[in-house]
Length: 124
Image (cartoon, rainbow, N blue to C red; front, side):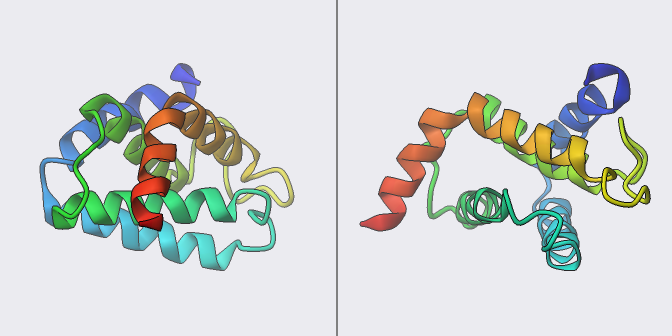
């Protein structure tokens, strides 16, 4: 994935998490894209939603029990999701979001323990 935007998405995410306004924009744009492509993303809709909730809670200062590395990976997945030209360009019918789905799944796997802690926190 590094060749096709993942490395760039991580670098952008590292800068975005330090700027609340830009981070809010990433969340909102990704949420709009998720709604627009809900049918194609149905396998990962719940996963995307948990990323949105976690990042929003972190941004508001409500939840901080996540490492910077995991936060960068999760925000990086959102940034990658927003890139129209990545490993598989999004405008290609049917397969255009396949790489986005894969990146989101990989990000959740990489931050699995911390996402599970967030879900537990959220359930309390």
